[in-house]
Every structure is written in C-alpha cells, then in structure tokens.
Amino acid sequence: MQLVVGRIGRAHGIKGEVTVEVRTDEPELRLAPGAVLTTDPASAGPLTIAAGRVHSGRLLLRFEGVGDRNGAEALRNTLLIADVDPEELPEGEDEYYDHQLMDLDVVLADGTEVGRITEISHLASQDLFIVERPDGTEVMIPFVEEIVTEIDLEEQRAVINPPPGLIDDRAEIASSREAEEGAAE
Image 1 (cartoon, rainbow, N blue to C red):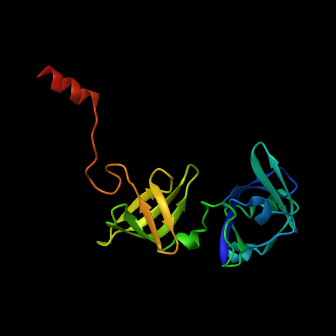
Image 2 (image 1 turned 90 degrees about the vertical axis):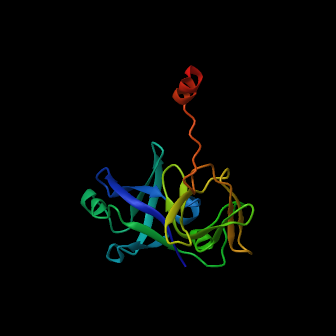
C-alpha cells in the first residue's frame, strides 16, 4: 500500500535542498536518510533521501542526485509516497491511516445515517472527511475529537456529534442585534 508522506515545496539554498510539507505523523520513520520514495508524478522519482534537517521549524531534505538549486526547484509540488505494509497500524491509539477511514459509514450517536467517507482532505489546521450523503450531495466534517466521537473499524463506522448547521440547514443563529431588537419591541 502507498501513503503520501509529503509534498516538496520550494528550493532552499543552492545545494539542492528542498522544503517539505510533511503529511505523516511519523516523519522520523518515513522521511529518514536512506528512505526510497516513489513520486507523483512518477517521472520525478524514485527519490532517495540523502540528508534531512529542520530549519526554522520547516523540514529540509536533500535527495541523492540532486545537487543544485535548479534540480531542487524542478521537484517543486512533487508528492512523496512511501510503500507501507497494509497490516501496519499507526503507533498512537487514536491515529489512523487514510485507507482505514475511507468508505466508513458516518452516523449520528442515535444511529441516524449521515453518509459514507469518500475522501479525506488534509489541511494545515485540521483534516476533513468528505462525506457523500445518500442523496449524492457532499458534506465536509472536521476530523476533530469534539465532532468525531468514535471510530469503530470493526463495525466500519464513524460516529459524529455535529454542531447545529454542520450537516443540515438548521443552524442556530445567535445575534446580539436580534436580541436587542427583541428587547426594544
């Protein structure tokens, strides 16, 4: 099985280093020197990590055979993909690989069906489940503990407790202006 573990950003310096947007919870394992990664687009790889370091809070990598800024810049926006044993599980108790979450049924705590996870979007601030409803429409659900209260891989379901308005149009509107108008009448 293949996992996207990073995306190459801009070149850093003149010796072939690149910035990397990390997309794994295990960068020390997946993005270590000596690791061989396939790429998307495939024509850019495979790439073998020669060295890595953190600079100003950002991961910098250098790949074998890439020795200058031009070579590094040519790799910009390339996805880094690691081959992972499908039986391997993340180390943390509440951590999951995307393939484990795909196609899970999404239900409310009372069992009401919401839909099925069709995509997982990894944003800087949080991950989002893209859920296809039975009527074919989609809803985005933040993958945060307050909303996704349970992941049950055996039952193939994710239980959610959404705030008003997240999955329906019955949002609670709280406005101080409305309260003031109501008091003035």
